[in-house]
Image (spheres, rainbow, N blue to C red):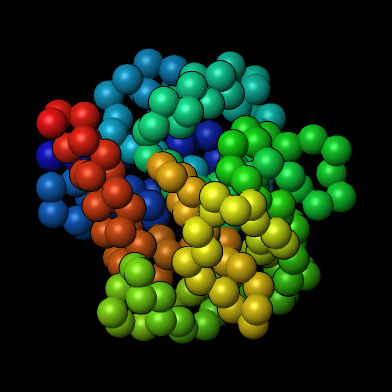
Length: 198
Ligand code: GLN
């Protein structure tokens, strides 16, 4: 059984937990304090508001433990605001949050809440079927370093990336009922666990 946490400071937490718990051999748990990091095999940083989430991470003194865990190889998946938390650079801003993924992101890249949209895309490395993608005040990746694997683009904009143990999507798979990305991430976690035990 895999235990996958969802950072529960702010944002779309329950939706991710429901998706994780719908997968075979996966338990989704909330992560709120440093001790919670000890019992998880992987972590989702949910969508919400990255400035608020970054502030709460610092306020609850979780930035360091989270950084250490990711740097030591724990699989992490940032969705939307979570992608922004992982990025090394945020366009137009002087500082970043965790700064672990070699991407530069543009926040609110598609405009206001009114410009939120849904589309369907074939992402062969994730699923052989079309995947619905929901964008809500979403960022996109303006540029990515050489170690970053681009998984998906929409209208020439990079919207899903992977770099070693880190996965980031500009959209919200937890809001669609489609479990392809959750399965993909759980597989990443499973592979990471078995590489430890072998
Ligand atoms: N616009 C938000 C931010 O900049 C992200 C939106 C989301 O996570 N749906 O943090």
